[in-house]
Image (cartoon, rainbow, N blue to C red; front, top):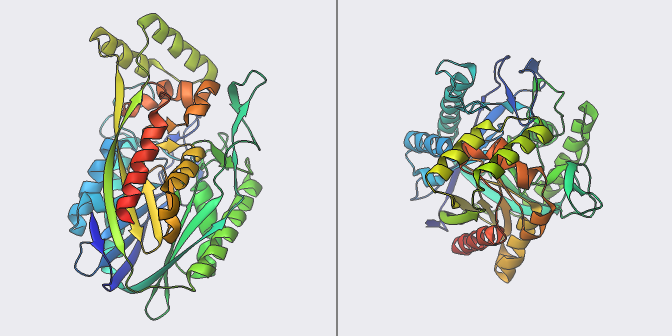
Length: 445
């Protein structure tokens, strides 16, 4: 962990286009066709912060659904090497757009894609462009000051609708479900008063556009930028919150996307107005990581695994054969216990403190994080987010486990197998993550 306070701060930004080519598969819905065109461009925006006497810290906001943790580690290594900093001081913040490219090494059937395939070619380009954006940000460093604030936003709604028996079988709008409406923001400007960047944290799935959209889109992150950037004259970085069970309040078409952008952008501008009125040119800059060893349910026997795979395919029209092969192999080797080591990565920039996990945490975990942080959080705008340095799987609180649903019961067989998330969590899993997040946050205070 670095601990820098009282020294002058340098900051810079760089943005590079990462719009994928037509013909690539889009990830996030189980679409029957590949990408056709471009609704709006995708980008990677890097923010570099260099306190006096410390190596730079880099935050990258990527219009991408999220990579596996292994790929995330490799990309952080590449960026750290190019920037002359530790990979632990590189934060990959995926927007989780569901209208972005599938750049995984394996396809949905678990078959390795050819090295020259469109998906793997794009993955290599994504790494190159993320490094390029980081270099641009470092080349643009100049003396800066920062301020932060926090406002409420009404752009998201809990999506887990329970049937009369208490089971979640579909997504919709659940007005009684947990929602974290708090939106922490960060404003950065040069010492000459010229705007440099804004950072917005909020929990909302990148699903304003639906499965029938076959055009690449940054979705909610892009809609936010179309409101904030013309008003501020500076790049805006969107950092996802605890969005595992949070959908946009409006969904389905261009009008829904525009309304979402207005609500997100309007709230962000209110916060930035407050943040820009209280600036610090010698802020505290700290970062750190903590490991959380998360237990999942033990693997079923082979008969139950076959039934589970068949039900996943029947209910969600998605292949589960890759998961079944992995599970059968582990059962044959008597390796039925499942644990996933997760690295949490956090940073503090002045009064803005964010802990990120390579997961899709539910909103209740963000609320619990701040509650357990308690009075210690009074001096900062503290937030817990997901989609950071990778995306392994959904993490619900214990009280949601009995309701089942896609996020809990079926996601492991549909995409969790890509990163070792083979089974649903157990009752204590979420509590472990929150406790580790609180421990890391207290180190950064």
